[in-house]
Length: 403
Image 1 (cartoon, rainbow, N blue to C red):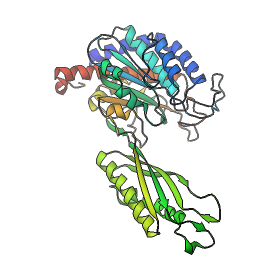
Image 2: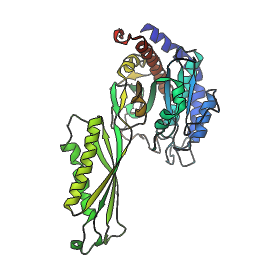
Image 3: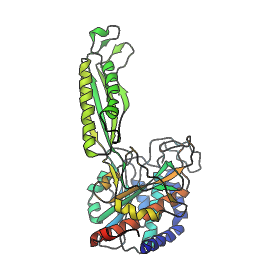
Image 4: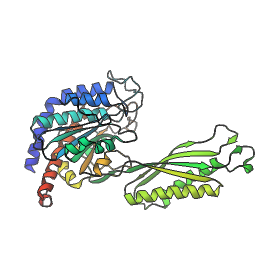
């Protein structure tokens, strides 16, 4: 463990010299954000700052490998996209273009820049890859493009590390939990079809609005009555659309919703329940229901071995390891964890106030100090991942312990 700590301290020392530049970069990115599908200039800016400009664009993203030519690399991932939100922070470097980094991606990018620079300057034994990923906030997810790219194959990535700001946990606290930490996320569409007509003569119609209301109510019983209470799941409705007039019952009502689950088998079962309940309840009102599911991110699962090595390294430099954070939120980082040893850690920005701006708020503005916190988490993940990859390649991981 002493060798691991020494290596980590070496990166930490290098980090101190680059932090002012990382803060300046964060302000530049924050002032001129780009929404999903328009991030190419941001990716090129980061590539230039890292000394590797004009590399192939991967759907506006980049995969940049640094270090030794051969061998498995550890990738550090940062998201490039902003949200279509009008900023309300009032800082001099606030965005004015109708988009905003309201999910902390500007901090993630600046921290990745600082972490990769720190690793490069210490002549690492294991290559590091800067994974500059587009479209985390929108479908289709940018992680899918990265995994399909030829550059992904040639980069020889063996593990992926990510970190995300989280105001639900206190500033100075990190969470790097083993196992599932984010849910699989799927979206569904239900169209209830009946026979519309005059609202004054309901006996002459097959009321799609009434059927839709019954379907929505019935769907809430899936979690409370069809799901094991020890198995996390969410079924939420986000959109109901139907009709154009107060005195006309429409032919159709459209319902959009999301399903969140932590197990692949349970994921399929909940999808089937949503479909069968919507169709059977609609039929009871003389209507029909069509059902379409759009598969989203898989479960995000952290590699236990990397977490075990990583957690002791997170203690210090204003950081402590707090309680494990797991949520039914989703992140397309899950696509990486589905195929490679990966860890997503959460970095606290909360101040304990229930009224503090949260993620996706037009007032969300973590302090510049969060760049250092995220960078240190990425560095701890890199050191842990390179150690675990080395142990696995030599077949000695089972004999290794933190003692």
